[in-house]
Length: 291
Image (cartoon, rainbow, N blue to C red):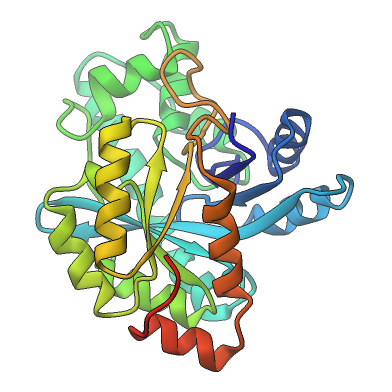
């Protein structure tokens, strides 16, 4: 198990466990550095940072995972060390969460036509104060016996290409990178091998300020990780990684710390974040830095 996990989700978006629960879990497992990267929200960060004060030796990096639109499909951009109190960031993410609500309602309508009847009010109850996402719909389906597991809902109905899938309005990857930079953060391309032509996408985003790619990822094998590390070095980018843990289905998803992220990868990310503003800006604009 790695001591590092830079991609964790909480109930602030579509994770099963609260920010406090996630912090307690990683502390019990002996992790040293984690990042909370909820989808299109920073609402769980303050709670996670507060909870981490009880655990000596644990560092929580404030992050976000921004969903973006791309001609060949969806691209996610991670933002590390963001100012989670930034007003522009908060307002933009709020608008994006509204599209999540509209998307969820559209999925419920499609499921209804398939003979799967779940209540919007129940989905809202499950989501609580968090951003509504597909896992909340899946939980409502599970409660009514339409599926055997949370993962079953995704694989049979609500993943991209599924009969109840609904897309939503998003910003472009370039816009996400720039938003993260304006929020004081470091933008990283999430799970690159889940998108078409990751090399081309990386090149495009490096031109507007991308500083890294997520090479260590639970669903990537050793050969794929090696390919991504070499690609990062070729573009003078750092590498990060994480489990992308949601707590949805232990049988199918990578567990906390399971992505085998080297401690050195987190240390390089932290070092870049802690550089003086002028030097960090120089690195982001293309000057050479340690990969």
